[in-house]
Structures are given as structure tokens and as C-alpha cells.
Image (cartoon, rainbow, N blue to C red):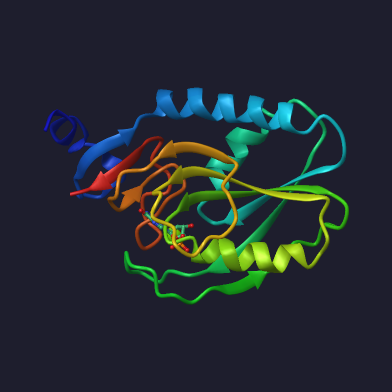
Length: 186
Ligand code: IMP
Ligand code: MG
């Protein structure tokens, strides 16, 4: 309840109230730094391409790459699976393909949250066809309910509560991506 009162006045929320701050800015900062170190250690050699899934990964990716202390390239993918609702529609559309060469590179696919896993499984299938040297997933949040993802998520920031979350890149109908914390809406 304290969080509701403290954040009720956050002008970024446009009058909406957050139910709970799941992960505050300092917890996120500390964990993203650890993930960067883990990724740095995992790739002692080879070309590394950090591939962000837009739009949800944009803040996470920008913080993450600054904690990866080795050469890398950045590109993005655009897929669309959700409309304005909070439930997966089941459709995944690829709207933008990375222009960077993928063949022979270590790819770390960066996602905001793994929910059903449908989006990622579809993307993993597409990316595998480009013959990368390796392909791993890095997700800020994981709900651990993914039934459709048959590829391990190698790098996970936090286990997510089974609530609809917003902030630090995650949206509800394109709102709230700019919150510096991850919260569930009231
Ligand atoms: P999946 O295909 O069901 O795993 O859904 C993945 C995508 O749905 C994520 O990249 C998010 O954009 C969106 N999504 C899933 N859960 C949430 C949530 O709790 N808050 C905001 N977006 C979510
Ligand atoms: Mg979304």
C-alpha cells in the first residue's frame, strides 16, 4: 500500500496508479550491470551482435550494452504480437529485419519480457536460418510460464510476477515505457 501512496502522484502516470513497484531503478541498475558482466564473460572471442527486439527492449538494451566490456554491434528487430490489450493475440508479425550481417556472429537477442514465449520462438526460428555462430536470449524479465519457447533463456534479469507490468521499456498501449522502474498497474 505504501507504494500506491508514494507513486500516486508520479506525473508520468497520467492519473493511473501503480499497484506495486516490482523492481525499482536501483535494483534494475544493479542487475543490468551483472548481466553485462555475464555477457562479457560468456563471449571471450568472435563477433558479437546485440539484437534488440523493439520497442520494449530499447531502454534495457541501451543500459545493457554499456556494461558489456568487449567489442559489439547493435541492431534491432521489430515484431508485433500485441495490440492495445494486455493479452497475447497469438500473431507475430516481423515488421523490420536487421540489416546487419548475422552469419557467423554470436547473437544475443534482447527482449523486455518473456510471457508466452511465442514471439521469441518465432524469431529464433527466423534467425537460425541466417546461420549465426550462436544464438542466445537475454530477457530483463521472465514470467516462467512460457510454453511456446523451446529455446533456453540464457540471460535473465528478474523472475517476473504474474501481473501486467509497465515501465523501463514495457508499455500498456504505448504508455509508461519511460518509467525508470517496473510496476504493475492498479
Ligand atoms: P509473448 O510472445 O507472449 O512472450 O509476449 C512477449 C511480448 O509481449 C513482450 O515483448 C512484451 O512486449 C509483451 N508483454 C508480455 N507481457 C507483458 C507485460 O506484463 N507487460 C507489458 N508487455 C508485456
Ligand atoms: Mg509491448
